[in-house]
Image (cartoon, rainbow, N blue to C red; front, side, top):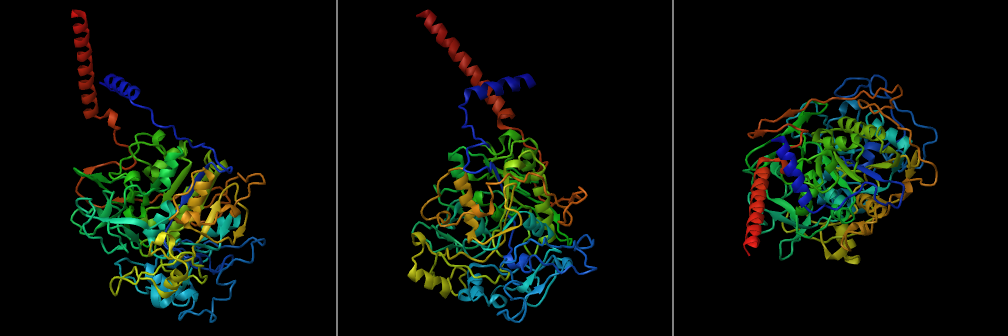
Length: 607
């Protein structure tokens, strides 16, 4: 039977047309041959860098979860002194214009309440650029969830961490490049940030029925300023239409799903057109089980507070909103050789597939890494400590790989969570949607509407006001400038632009933000020899691994009880060409062809 499988599989492979040979070594405009984009959640720049590079280093402090002493942080004396922080700009105390003043969150206060981060609320908090209404519009001081060991505080939105908690990011900033002038491309929550990263737009979305996966007759409320065909702009976080695990795998859920109109291109399409290898790798993407018709995504972990969260979040997987780049059934790659290339996984993978490709020396040219929820930094169910574990772990792996010599790791964020930041964005695109009902979260505030009056919205599309709140942006690479702070105004689509420019992909279209985004080139030094020596951090604290011990963490996962057929995470299902139905079909086809050939020979002989 094994010989039969091999023979038939070989015959089928020879009979099929060869797919284009995508290459990780495609021609690039810079020495960067591999880009790894780590994309955590919901952080403003001031929330993590308010006092950079000065940490409090309070004796006796411990880190939440482990209870171990918090890492001390002492900056390199050569650290730039012109970083636009709260401390630098004199806004830590009474000079701050907000009704509550900024305050330090300790390392044992890592798990906090999720803040308010809606499109309209963030505009109101910015208050026309005065940046003085965060407490009234985006602060959530009490945690509504049933989680334990969660820190609450009056005016919580004004809280910030320092290098005793976010040691990994501060250490990377010391050794590589940090941008202190980077923003979300529009105001609002997670999904718009993800969509701008991969498509440069939040326009083009329609609502879909969760049961039929067909477009609804009437657009859902999350589709803003829809046209006659039901196409509009997304400002909220509905799950994607082309994903089995949307709506938390609840088949009875009534929440409509979102998807782009067919023909809307994303950065994956541009890479496919140029045969550039790529993939989106997300925690929890591998199903925990399957039922008769769908994948079920119910693996989970506990954060440092001991609170449980499912790993997979469907609305954090942007390529699932596009039919042509979706992997609806979460099918794993047939082999490690498929990772990054066209195949049954359609470029959408679990994080373990990234590790397999890295270990095999076949890293795709472009990789997007998305943490499982407990490690993504999103307040409420994640935290900076768990997030730091993720960033240090995967960056260490990349730096220890054969690909490190020509790799850049970019750390960027999807949105601010509403956390306070004092630096006002310079609006580049306005919007004047008055709102369809009193509490419409797509309603534009006067700042955005006034800008739209003098600067018509790009392509006439509403509800894309921005850039929004400032967020961290770091570049870690042998070619990064060392201990450098870039002041270039950038945004989420600046990362998109780097991919386009480096691999010669062209732009996504005239209605997209990649065309306006400034490049991140100033964070690189391509003139001097690259610094290829790995800079490794301890995974448990983010401190420099001076003794070579990375203190690798092994977090225990769990599976929520869900009806379905067992499926072993991390193990690829049998490729289609080795499955019984394919073999039976091939045998039947072979018999038919042989019989037809024999009949033809017989007729010719009789003629």
